[in-house]
Length: 197
Length: 197
Figure 1: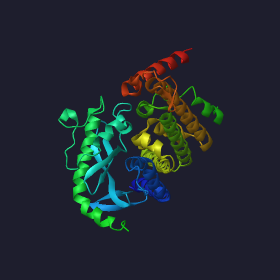
Figure 2: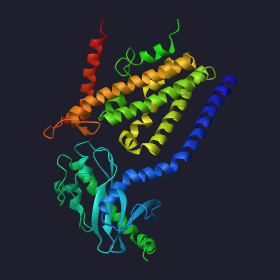
Figure 3: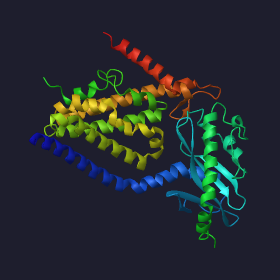
Figure 4: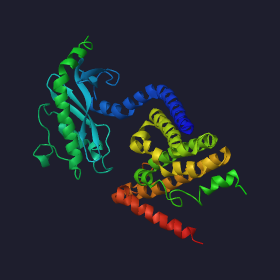
């Protein structure tokens, strides 16, 4: 019995020490990690699809609640008006979830740009959904309510050759994005009033 | 006669080099050696965990009760792995994105637990440190060698720099899973021939 207690205590002490150390490190690195995520994952994609905006969309961002989930919305100013918003959505690809940022014009409800952030698709095959601009450019100008599909599913989008599943994943993310956009559009417009001067 | 620390270090570089002599930890070896950058990054991360866990386990070897030693080792190893994960996210985010799930999986890498159980638990701190460093550096070298072969043949690049002319058609089989098995098998075979006396 005494030995049992001793074993128990050793494990408890070990785990507690470990937890303490990790909490400290987590605290110390948290801000840096958030910054890195914006810089490396979303930053380049947002800058690309909101190219030509007069503000910095990375700093002009806010959070909106959707079904208890926080969505970070990035704002692009065009012609002196904050009329383009972008946020991330996910679709199911070949190797896991494909993170996709979609930007849309609030006035016309049309897609301005699409870009893939995180994915685990096959390098050189599915990964071209991220790197090949001729694939993502096809989404530009499509109305948000349109059910975008790849040609194999009877839609309009030319899939990346050899990577129909990855392309389908991106389309799925765009469709889901559109649904979420409809849900949170009013919130977004409320928040955007702060940007209008 | 106890071996010197230098001998403990050098044995990890040839006589017991993982995963060729010490055929352990094959899962990350196969999965991350798609590119040289990933291979080296994974090697360094594993080396850090190996060295730290070997030192700490060797220091605590008289405190840890035998019956719960594996649980204690795992707590120690998991702590260091989480440290690596957080630090990598904060300072080398692009690398973290590529290695992804394989960083947390270092916890269950047999090499780390194997060295803790087979070496650190029975030796004092200095040899345990040398052993961890030697095995870690050996593991890094193996991963680098394997990833050089795979990246150069499979993608036509070395550390993201193209090595062949634009007319080179990448042998993309090599960067996919079967290529990993074939390549590792051939290298194991070469190592066995070289090691034959």
